[in-house]
Amino acid sequence: MLAAPADNPENYCYCYPDRDHCLGSGMLNLQPCAKGAQVIMSTPHFYMGDKVELAKLEGLHPNKEDHETFLDVEPRTGVTMNAAKKIQINVPLKKYGNLPSFKNVPEVTFPILWINESATVNATMSKDVKKGITLPFVVVNAICGSLIAIGAILLIVGVIRCIRIRMSRKQRKL
Image (cartoon, rainbow, N blue to C red; front, side, top):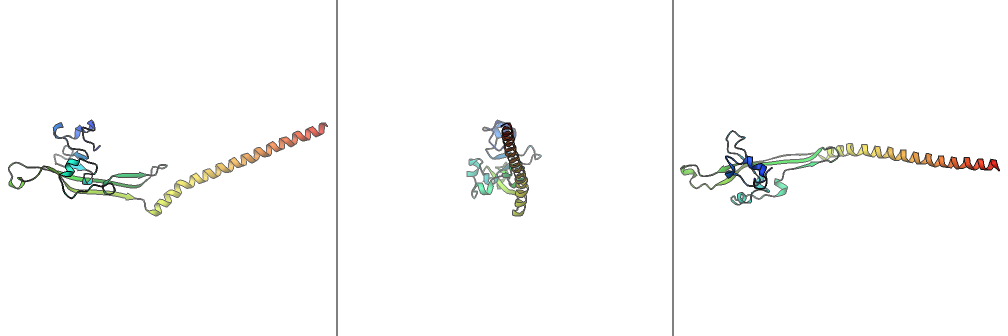
């Protein structure tokens, strides 16, 4: 979703006002969706984003641990155990007309803030989820094992009884 349009042609729809105004990797221009407000969304510190934009700014140090969006899901139930959605809100800075205060402004995507929405299942809930997931499997496995053992015992008893009956018939015939 955050790939540059050159890498993912489906993202040309985010080029505004036309294809000549596309942003680099890791950024979405929300101007068409935000009633004309010049808002650009990205990953925090342009993590895994456009290196050109990152090089224009000082003080940004993207790293996976702090800036990656992730979702840890328990595979059997689909319960989310750990999640973090991290997004950065930026505005494009550029020279606006002949305004003196914007005379020396470089053209850059300027970060305003970034948001980290995180949720983690605590240790108590994690144990409850684990118990709720593993206990039914333990019970089913125990019942299946017991039924297999009973079936095997009955099969062995049946074979022994058949052998005894045949042996007793042979002894009667003699």
